[in-house]
Length: 139
Image (cartoon, rainbow, N blue to C red; front, side):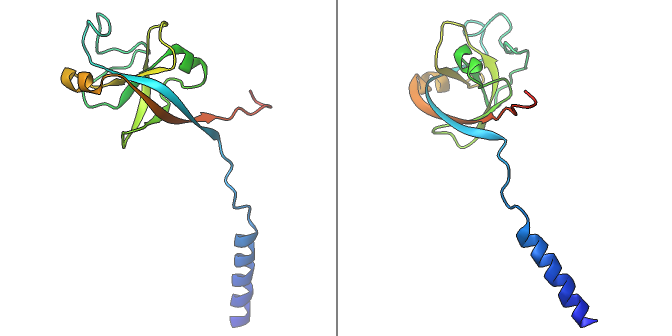
């Protein structure tokens, strides 16, 4: 009986180590430099519906959302994508889009805290995100 246990264990170990250990990456890491500003849920900064984004999502203070310029949308930084912003520990989610006049720009949502947004000001920073790989057969 002990001989069979060794055989079974050997087969299991062989299968374990012969498996392809590479995990297929479904996206490509992308890092770009953008101009980052901040905004609040206020009519004069957004629209007559300051708590509704251009995508129709609701804004509430405390949420980690960003708006992106439309050229970034066109290059793959799309609605609901997770973004790592230089200087912040948490991920932010693309939930809004900016006026067409802006290029290579993000706007970080800062709830109703106008002082925090003013203190942030305007900075050149790096952002990172993962651009999905399109399957040439399917897409």
